[in-house]
Image (cartoon, rainbow, N blue to C red; front, side):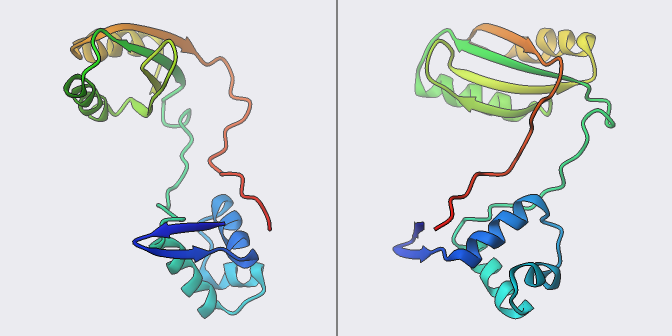
Length: 164
């Protein structure tokens, strides 16, 4: 596997792959702990992690929070269709969506809809207010179709990484 970045290519070896797999599940490990898991000393592991970051394999480190404990108990998937399709209208829609903290994910998709949103709110009343006051104020939305999550079966942020 390789990545081209500014005319340079980085080849991932089995240790790089192992580092990426481990960090996807536990990014809070110290360099020393990570080094022990891949059977290397801390300095080369630190250098490998920094190189993976520079080349864009590691984009960010985050804490995954419990939405329910933070009173965001209702997860909604909302499919959006725009009335018109121009670059300016699409760009304005994206700008408007980025300003809504309730929208935690947004994808531009193909098919019957233009955008797919993942929305987290406290309850159905909050979602109703969100649709009427916030989403409804965005210009050029033709339709919004909501699907409410009854139970989460699998939620993983890990990307499957092939071994060599």
